[in-house]
Length: 70
Image (tube, rainbow, N blue to C red; front, side, top):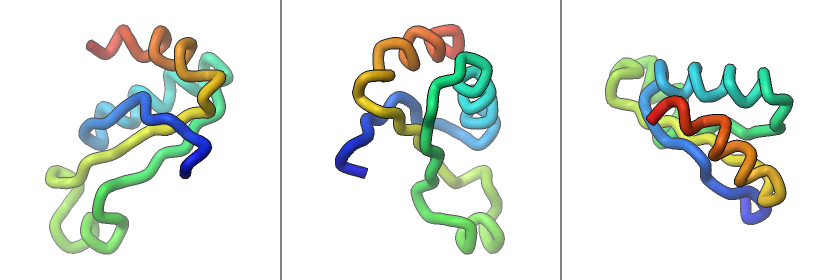
């Protein structure tokens, strides 16, 4: 993940919205979570944090696209 930059972190609901916005803008991205699927299965997604990374050259465009979430 050294080649990617963080552009989003938030809840599952927010991550789904952000992911959709990036997909609509055709911005390649990588979604990951803090603890992983095993944690979510046991504790639920309410406690999980999600992160979206993009290529460095897409950072500005991704941030502009995700600005509507703030």
